[in-house]
Length: 271
Image (tube, rainbow, N blue to C red; front, side, top):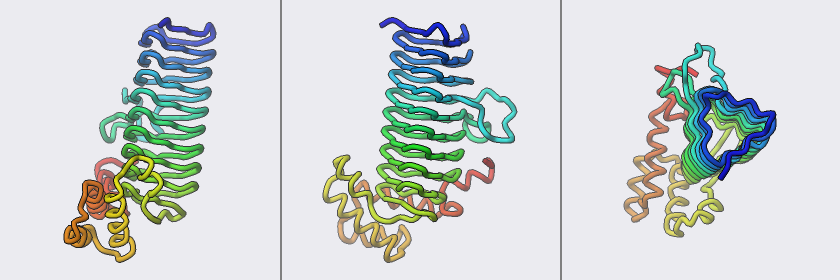
């Protein structure tokens, strides 16, 4: 497949452009950018810094990938943004490169969908098949596991971890970790129930759903710590892989600071 580049695109000759890439009008591609096969930059897209974009991504107008981190300690170091395959970035998405406080990289997995005006801050690590809706903002150092869904207009605090198959309701201020399989909503954010619709859509077994219901009841209604809940669930034969993952996540969260397990990293890295 031939590469197609609009006459008005501005591409540094040192950029690496694979076969089959489409670069539309008024796109700007920097010298350290690498763009994978079949990726489409529709128009007015900027790819800056040491940014690698994988195969078959679609990037809509006014999106900026690889801008400098919004971190006052950043002094122009060659940090990175790494993006996987088959992602969609709608209009006005901004994703910044890493700072020098962790690995120096912001990393996006594959098959994710970023709706209009989403912002992903420096040093965020996102998995696969994540949906983030319009006008949601991720602060720096956030980790988001695969299959998470974030509704529109949410703000996520730095160093928050979002668990797999979780759901964050619209306009939520998420300043605590979001446990896997749970639905979190509100300002302040609060675990409301399990993400029953998402679990069914993703084929989680009825037995696991029942066990997660009971785990939610013990932890968020009976106020048990993870170890106590594990003992009760084990006695009833309900410690499936999903429940074990939930309990491990909550135990790590409880060992952190301010409801954020990874907040301990701030002892050596301040956002």
